[in-house]
Image (tube, rainbow, N blue to C red):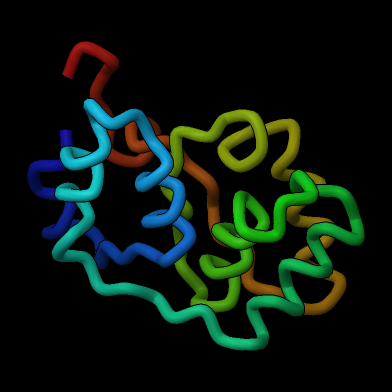
Length: 127
């Protein structure tokens, strides 16, 4: 499924993604981390913490400042066009996206489009 993605998009990752993958199941952890090992790492600058605080204040992300709120804040701060995630509960969720958009617009934040890999690259669960 990821074949050709580098030709179509500038792929990046973040410390929040690495932390999440490192907490994954031991049987999959190395494969998952290997998929992102060569990707440029977006830095977490102080302004990202301010964005996380906005998300937590408005309850659009769980209260874990190192989790989903951090991933979304990094993507917003670095103006990523897409936030690719399998997290359909808090990030790639059409019902939640309107709320995220309303909160991001207030302070003038960039709004990354949350997508699953299948939505962004096409394919099916069988790929």
